[in-house]
Image (cartoon, rainbow, N blue to C red; front, side):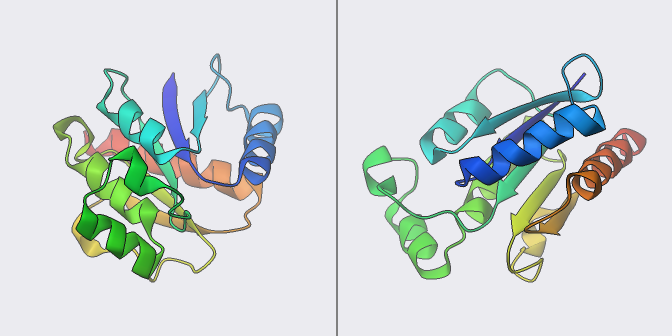
Length: 153
């Protein structure tokens, strides 16, 4: 069973997408894999630090910087970067890549802007899906990322 961790600040959109993936495209714990959704950046950081292992990350790039100073998960320079560039998803990806267990775990970014803001320094495998997306297309993207990861091992 594959485990996917989804980070986005739009619960209505994400829950609709996940429900469609589960109902129509087989993304359930007993079939293709289990999807966990998180909307809070501090909870996301805690989850990647936990002993849980994920096979794929799906990250929204543009997440509002609401009260992140109080959460203590980013340093002052990172907070300024988030406020300037509106790219919290990129910083979360950098924090994911800092863990040895996730150096080559696939990451799919969701972005209204497309892939022009994804830094090369994140390494591979990284891909981008433009919001909004059809569940069928997104399911295919997840399967392709996971199968390419299995072939690389």
